[in-house]
Length: 170
Image (cartoon, rainbow, N blue to C red; front, top):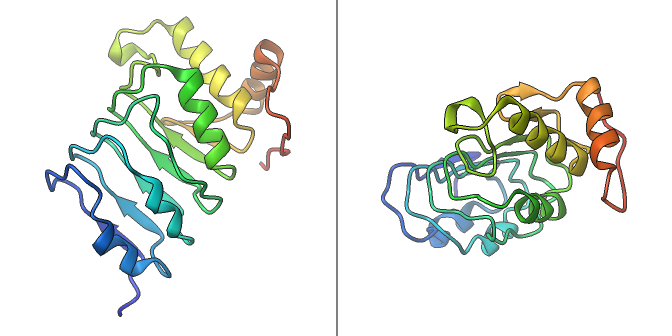
């Protein structure tokens, strides 16, 4: 079988993840795009993709209660424009299952308030501080780099609640 590093199933009207096709590239796949479909759950088998670094789930039906597999190789998760409403529940799952995540984008979800979806600037800052306080490996949140000043403020406001905290690399 040919080694494939990038695979896209975007805009395919999928209601289920096509594992039969995806898992045939489990030894080589690094980037998977499942955006703009009708997916809601059942991501557990993605854990078999040991080299996957980037997962794009934009514009689907994933919620705050979506369960992810443990994937230490994942460094980038885009889950923009889904149904994430509870930030605490969602970030707890993401932080636990993707311990090396550096880039997280969850714009246009209710749990990620911004000017574009009716949130105030204060809500936006609070959202950023909370996420940063829970995920010490993050370098980019949404469309903006995580700054040292934000890390300090996030730590002051929320105190890192994770039991093991990795030192941020800059």
